[in-house]
Image (cartoon, rainbow, N blue to C red; front, side, top):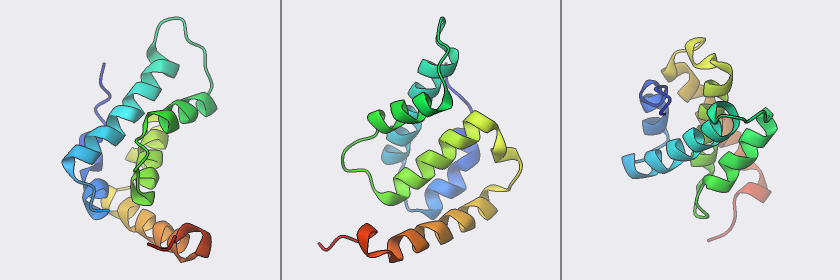
Length: 111
């Protein structure tokens, strides 16, 4: 089973410079977490467990932008909020939030 919301969020992935290969990794992690907690027969898990499964499925070299976009995608699928905003408006909002997060010294490690 695949959730079809991914193509609706292409603008967001592209706005953050996430290529197709990384997009597939993030979206697969979201799909797997949603399936394991919402659609798999016999499951009765909470959203917090869905988030934990998502976090376990992302690679170690994940970027802050990928986490942000993946978390938005996870939230969009869980709550169906993707229809309340156009993808371009959400991309602008997420870009602003990422900029704020990167301004904090703790989130901007030295190379």
